[in-house]
Structures are given as structure tokens and as C-alpha cells.
Amino acid sequence: MSNMKNIVVLVSGGGTNLQALIDAQNRNELGNGRITCVIASKADAYALERARNNGIKCRTLIRKDYPDISSYSEAMRDMLIEEKADLVVYAGFMTILNEKVCDEFPNKMINVHPALIPSFCGKGFYGLHVHKAALEKGVKVSGATVHFVTAECDAGPIILQKAVEVMENDTPETLQKRIMEQAEWKILPKAVQLFCDDKITVVNGRTIINE
Image (cartoon, rainbow, N blue to C red; front, side, top):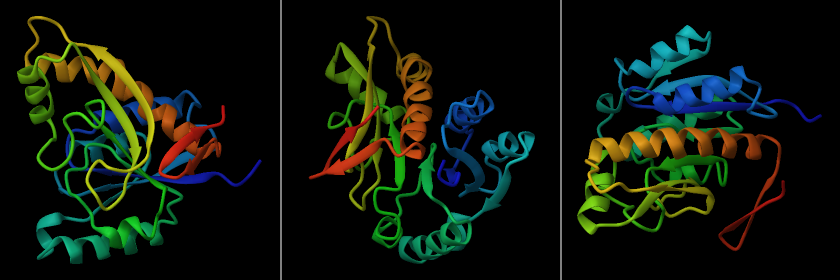
């Protein structure tokens, strides 16, 4: 068995995806990985409570303490190196980091996006905006995507996707909730487990999953 991988989770808000990861860890479903640190971009992120309640180390790197993305990205890179991160997970992390971080952790950072990429993704497509756009377009299915993070927003290699049915009377809020429960909270821990068990290979910008 190789050494346990250190998983560092980046959060900005409530941390429901972090909770899904913690629950998976408590069920021994993160494979050869452990959540060793949670880093929040906001001091009052409720996600920090969730981490503390589970005895996980918490740190903050406050976005507004930094003049720009570049200096913030450098500080985040240094903190991730300090924490010996083997895998970095964006769990509702609202700040786009630049290539200073991505280049330091190539194919070692993953994000969950609440749509089936390449639909409803890229700049400005976050939170309820994604679901509002999906409903305006009248799609019959939406879902979630877990992908590797690159410097280009929502553009990295796709690891897992799960489709979720859109209902006739959905609001952005009801669709968001269904996609979280049926897709995000399932495929994010699964992708983390696959990564920690060395089951993901990236070839020409595509992932091969060796289960």
C-alpha cells in the first residue's frame, strides 16, 4: 500500500460538498486518502465548522486580504505546498486561481461543477446562475461534472459525470438541490477515491478510469 494521500479541500461557503467528502471518509470510502486540511477563502465559511466538528485542521486564506488574483494564487500555492497536498479539491470554492497554482499541481486539483460540461460552464456560471441558465434553455437533463482544474475555467479533463432529470416545475433552487443530492455528493467522493487509489490516467486531455 502506498502512503496515504493528503487531501486539502478549498471552501468558500456552507460546505455541503465538503460534508459529502467527510461522510464518505467516515464510511472509509475515500480509498487511500485522508482529508488533512480545509482552507477557506472567507473567515465565516460554515464549512470550517464542519471540518472542526470532524477534527480536521482548518486554515483561512482570505481573498479580500490580497490585492489581486495573482498574489492570492501565490499565497494559496505556498499554503498547499506547506500542507503537502497530494490532491486539492474545490468544494464550493468561489475564487478562480491562476496558473501559478495549477502548474504546481497538474492533474492534482479537482472541481465539481453543477452541470454537464461543456454545457453551462465557464466564467459567470456558478451557483444558481448555472441552474437558471439550464432552465431558461429548457434542457431535459442536467447534472454534475467532476473535472481536473486547469488555468482555464471549467476546461480541464473530465473525470466523472452524472445526469439528473429536469422536472417540468423546477426552479433554480429545486434543480440545484436535486443535482447536489443525486449527482455532486455522489461523484465528488467517488472521483476523490479513484484519484487516491491511482485509478485515473490523463492521456491527451482525456481521462482513462482503470477500475
